[in-house]
Image (cartoon, rainbow, N blue to C red; front, side):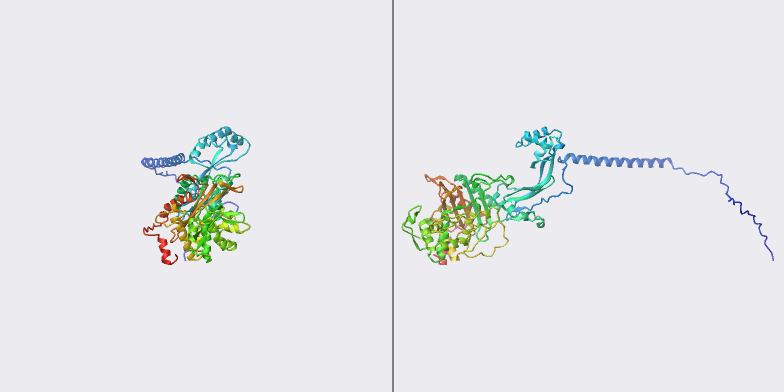
Length: 598
């Protein structure tokens, strides 16, 4: 057995530390790799190019921004607005029946001042007076130095005015953007649209509120965000409205009238296709309401809706129609026209002596006051009131205008026999031209009640309450056609359109009470085509006078009728109505003969 010799163990002292063995450091030199000089040069070039590119991009961005600022419109910061403040200013458009814009919103610029930021308040006031001639430099100079920190100067200014104010270089004159209501057609249909104004506002936005017309009636709808900007579509036709206003304005000047009104209405739906009152106004710059004098002298006064007048002989067809409906007469019944007709201390006369007797048709054609009054006496006061009430003459019209509810017809508190007689030919009861259009449409469309509206209808509404039979409605249309063919409205004939209508001339009342001795209101109410009625047209002139046939003329046949005739000729083609020419005979007369109605 071989034993291996054990290596002697190193004796250790527990109290002596063990010293580790440290290997001897190598003394040979270490080789460090070195890059080629060409590679170092290339790296330096790349770094320089990258740095140059960064500077180039930065300078290009700054240059582009400076160019954009210099090319943009001068704009001042909106100082002073509450953080997070927001005023809802979106308002829906208003369009005509074909979708053409009547009222819309545009972005406008307001001018305001913060005097505590001004360098020279006096120079600022003088500069503003040069830009805006209506501003008084002395007044605004005192305001700017009064210690107040904010002033509205102009709600809307033009771009040229904005640039002129900016050129003043005054830091205390500031601009704010907001929406404004714009009426692109100016005065056209101004009494229908009414107008709008600013409500709550700050320097960044303004609330638009309607103050008259459909703008006020439909204010909630136009401002309602739930409508999502859907336009309010009216029954007005822009082309027809333009033609009607042009002819009415020319006729008013030709007849030397103080004012005029016209209404064109669909006899079946009650849609008002055109409505005008002259003088008118521009809703973009709505004038202030008059605080004294006759309200009718103000251009804000809507003669077609607000004006209540005695409408004269246009009422005679209502009396004749009711007499026919009650079976008291027929179209050929002879009526006593011997005059004068006495009732107490009152005497009723005709404009001319028409002889002792006239048929009911000729009472209307000749416009006999005496014949109409005698028919009214047979009808009686109670039945007369009921009939006029059924036609809408005892209440305001339901049209969507702020002025309509206040235009209540003036009816007598007592209704003696003399009132029955005078109201039968349009005296003693005052109503608006719109009431008359409503009454004619209800009587002549077949005999059913119509209510006027300014909203376009998507379908023909259900017929209203019946006021007369279809037979009586047709006979009434025939009588009115005869008035144009051979009566007081002979100048109302429009070839191809078979116009029927009735004239009315009444003394003009004073706004303080009583009547003028030499001033009248003339009216012509017509329907066309008479054989198949589509539209009613009412034209009213205030204080017309014209020299014709060697005399001074003021009656409706010489004043209102020619104006209405020209309107019909102009708007007929615009309404898509083809003229119906029958050289042999009156087409409507042939229709009545064939139907056995005459």
